Amino acid sequence: MPTSRRQQIQRLILPAVAGGCLIFAISAVIRPERTRADPPATPPTAAYASTVAGIGTIEPQSELIAVAAEVPGVIRSVLVQPGDRVAQGQPLFRLDSRAAQAAVATAQADAASAQAAARQAEVALADERQRLSLFEAVDDPRALSGDELERRRFAVRRAEAALAQARASAAAARAQAQARRVDLDRLTVAAPIAGRIFRVDVRPGEYAPAGPASQPLIAMGEDARLHVRAEFDEADAGRLTRSGRAYGTLRGQAERRIPLTLVRIEPQVVEKRALSGGSERVDTRVVEVIFAFDPAAAPAYLGQRMDVFVEAAPSATQAGTRPAEPAR
Image (cartoon, rainbow, N blue to C red; front, side, top):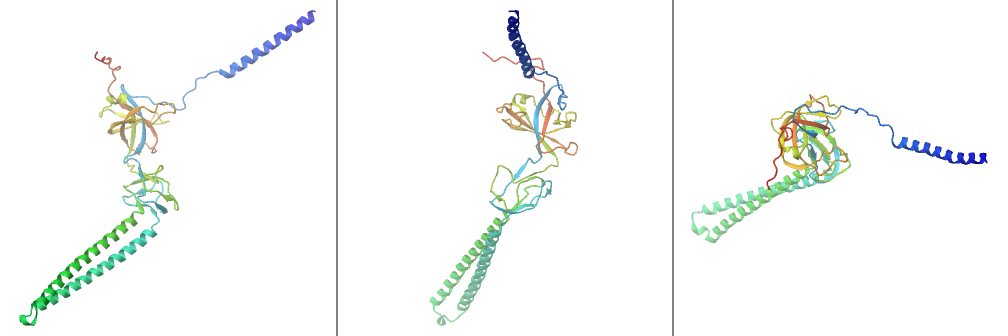
């Protein structure tokens, strides 16, 4: 009897102990020990007593120019690569121009033919005027009838009209030839300004659509000085001043403060585009402020994010004042 009772107790205690160990193991996995870790990089800090902070994106001083083709066509040659400096009007890439070249040759031949017809009309007019002068030089009225003299005068007028028409046709042919040359020139895409090539997304044999594309064919701009397009919450718009000092720090370089010079404050409030994370609200409205800095003093890449700090007017809380209550 005592042995049977001992076995019953063991059958109850052993499962309870095993269950307790299992619960402890599960709780240790679900709730691991939390340790405080240092941030991978020193976070940026404000250096002014009253500061407005925002997130900026680096761009060229001319803003980024998405070069597009004026007419669609197949690309035959690409003449630049990323990093090249180009002059205004320098060719960047060329489209297939065989049909356009043939059209130019045809138009030039038509213009030459029309010009020859105009010269022929000039000769005909000179001949008719010479004949009229001979008839008018006859002194004896009996040697020439009045009708014949009038016919000579009408012949001169017809020759003058024919010459005017021939000259107009020649001018139209020259204009048509000029239009064909313009069409040929449009197949060579040139740099709109002097600057640097940042991105080339075209290759020979590819089709280039006309107008803007989701991905620019060539991205370029003037980077002698770089700009930072910083976004500040519209709630802080009233605290921004044109005389306030400003500096920026690149991500991962919080200890290096880059002096910024105010260029302009955009007059329109827009939706926020520089989001700091996937959980950030996308319906926030911001004021865009453009700053400039020397890229030689602070090397940076286009599109790189920069934390911008601006010396601003103190807020109502910092000034120790309470906002006025609305009138009732």
